[in-house]
Image (tube, rainbow, N blue to C red; front, side):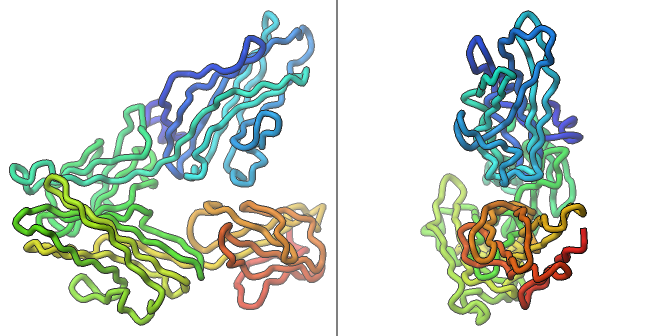
Length: 443
């Protein structure tokens, strides 16, 4: 697929030849057996199928579905899987029969891809004679992000040049075009970008047509830009109040045998500037709630590499801030400021309730939402009158007066404030919540 045309539709990378599965009675042929796609983008997985039928003048009918969970006897249709609610579409063509064989096509489209969508997808169809066929082994979808790798090709012959490479965790075939950004501005395209650093610059990359899905930023700092800081996560992290957040960084700098063994001092900060800053381990607002865990520094060739993780426990809304990592080595001019930065947003959960059908004022739809992050990027658990009633981004219920609802993120005990239905004229939220909820009379 041409990436320029993908920019106008969806982004998908096919990594192998068509795969044929089934028997002489019924077969499923996938357009590929492996697909690599960017998180946040859209992907199409297609197949053709055929089966034997003695149909002559009757209309051919087939029930079809795609699934990842369950088995051949009890598959979970993706259109009914709460993890894919509002993100999947089926597009199946008409069935054509000739010489006692019927043929059809079907395409699965998944929008707003998440890393949790990485799975094996299978197509299943049932004929008018109740014969069922499943296309094994299916199509493997891998969802990836981009990252920037920094290297100094030759510190001796080219000390002022830095090579940046745009990478992904699975191979993006089809000769994709990469776009490079320096300090937020488009500066060119290509798999690699060569830069003569001035210091204090940040870089990221994206695939053409999906410039909004950029890699985490990488900073070129210090002596001739040879020291770098990279945040593997997105530059915006959204976390629940009361939970624990881990902010990761990797860093590297030039190795010089004259200063062996190398010593490195590290710190994280939110307050102050590059020259005067407050180490979070000494910040009274974080007393007893922060830990810094840094791995050993390893040196290969002309570069030394290290990692450091900041853990903040019992998160508060006031912890929402920009966080920077800074490291200092025993090399001359080996002080590397904390740019770029990560933004941490701490949020509460909220339940929004409304009644989608005017003809049935008891049928309610509830959404679990937070004030930051993409909708539906986390598994939610639903509670009705204190009892666990399901899992998913949404919950549908025939709501009666006196019922109350709340939601939580799977794996956390922290629930949203209660929303309850008091009477036909009131839908209320528990004290302290600032929820936008609709009463029964609003549709």
